[in-house]
Image (cartoon, rainbow, N blue to C red; front, side, top):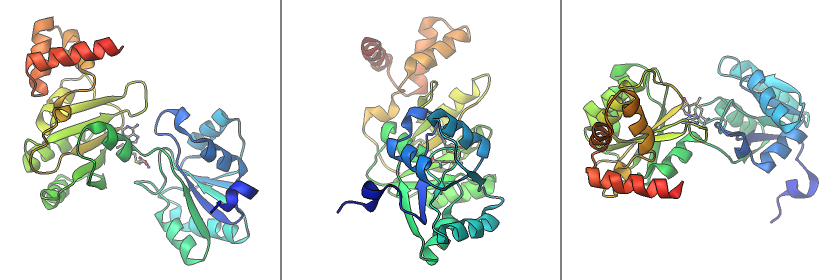
Length: 291
Ligand code: SAM
């Protein structure tokens, strides 16, 4: 079946959930760009942020703010416009709307009122992190943001302890050390990956145990950037990929910058990631050949 949109442009009175980049503007799909150009109204979290994206696309479109603090009132306004036949795109500041972002209420109410809802797929930090993490992808559990309070976080981790799935959480840089401490305490030595600044210039994947990644981050002058935390399910994860840092040279450079000799830095990187020096040499050799 050919979707109506391809024959007659966008469909009036339809709510489009449009995914936008999580860092790299090239990740906006041509279809998403066309929908943003053609809808009657764009509902967005932060109008300044979305205006920047539209400027990048050379577009000027009517915007209406739609965020967690005005979601309730704005729903009614948007539903009325949709019922009048206006097509509306919902975007968030980054990634897929409704995923740890506002929009769920609007989608529910639109469906209840017979308004057509469709999603334009695109960037999402959880799935992007998972597919490059080296952790099992056959089953995964997405928990959104870790709870902000320690006792709730610990409780949640205890409940998820035996789930046979890779666990994925969003976390802010100012809470990451506390959360990794709880992961180490409740889940022990499982392989963990922290995916930082995905799709951006300083993208990195920190791999190791929760405790070793915590230690790596703690040694930095500042913990910054957007982070997604992935935790292997209980039981062995045999693949060595789960233990190898994707950018060991960055880790090496950080130790060298702290004044360590090359030999000391190599030892430290190998230890952080549970690798023998030989494994690390081999990995470094391979990556330098690729560059
Ligand atoms: N709706 C978005 C999505 O589809 O991924 C998520 C929005 S949520 C408010 C923002 C959180 O997602 C960040 O605090 C971080 O945990 C994660 N995140 C967003 N962009 C990221 C990136 N480039 N690298 C790593 N994590 C990211």
